Length: 73
Image 1: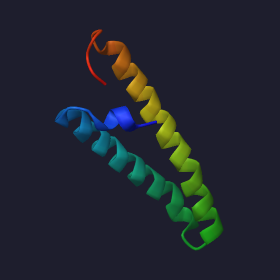
Image 2: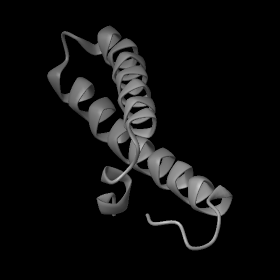
Image 3: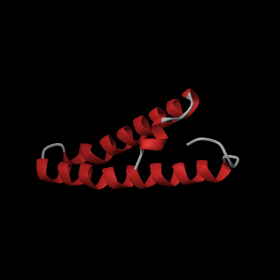
């Protein structure tokens, strides 16, 4: 699913890293209230992963639409 997103220019890779970091911080904030309830914390974490995947797929599709025809990726 993300193979082509790995072949991005450095600025694209940096943007991915920043978004991933932001997602992790947001997820941590959602998990923190459940820090003493392992099951709830895990449930929040599991819910967050598909959200990140959907976001990254959408961003990849948007990038592909903006990319001129004939460009790799």
